[in-house]
Length: 205
Length: 221
Image 1 (cartoon, rainbow over the protein chains, first blue to last red):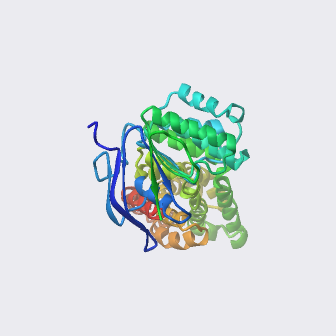
Image 2 (image 1 turned 180 degrees about the vertical axis):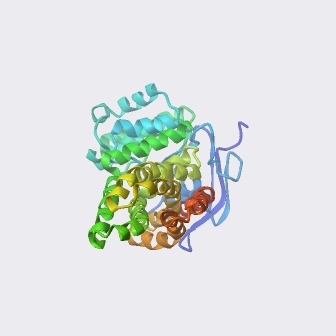
Image 3 (image 1 turned 135 degrees about the horizontal axis):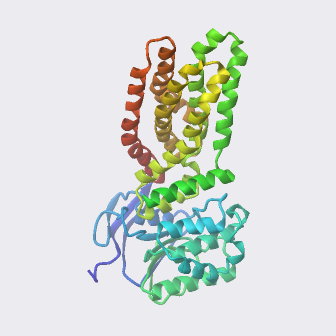
């Protein structure tokens, strides 16, 4: 069991609107590892991550999740991957606290862990605000807080640093580094240079 | 079950803090029914005849107005993706969405209908059949509308398109629902219509979650 890679792709190809945008991608993601996906705009970074999350069907090749061909969507224990895409998945009419508590409830996370995450990104003073009052960067920080308390060990991040300022980009790097040190795994598409010791690079396009 | 309640609570919270036009749809129902006596005059015999159909028409349009919002906000802000990755099946999410839509649209329509039937001139002794017909029919209205709602949120625009797809699909419910009231008023007894109306619900509750989830998954591709 220990040697099965968490996610493994073999000669993976996928297409968008009948046009093949990337082919022959082979990666292996192990415990405590980060893979950075790079490439210019339109090179298929987002689609690649959506394939890995099970949203987009692949055209050829294979993806193995824990050695199996089907994505474990129905996991009784809770989330298997933490997903941070272009969309923040926050209800704009609900308060920051309600938004976070909802995910903490369905993921069965203790409130202590949630509060730690809130403190780390210094979000305490916004808790009662409706999300619609926040700026784009603040919404992003809020979804990073949700990412931090998500019990899933695999993080799939699609340009997580968009809208963030210099200081918060560094915070994000620190969070990602901590996650890898604590045996978590990350696949992240990004244009930034992120220093994580145990990392691989995948260039698309 | 626990997750079911949490999803419903979240929907209700977001609806009551203004994230949906559920209130407007109810208000439309009230206004539309008040329009009928105004446009048909005060001929009470005529009004008694048409009242069942009028209330059903108003209920149909009211639920259609709010159906457009059923999945749209959760689809567009990415919440559905997060829920699916949380180990909850999309079919289950569809059921909870439909249930909270019925709680905020169908159920109020049922509760308001006795008062409205008096306004429109339906004889008070036929109120019960209207209430039962609406109670049996409104869940099916929500469920049948959920599939076009899922389709329309994935193509980005809704409004008119959803109306055109939904209306023909909802015809059986409309015919049986208003037919129950009309045949009861004319002395034939509406029970037969009610049985058929009740049969639509289990059929749609089995089929709809799969169809609506399929539509949403196609949108993600």
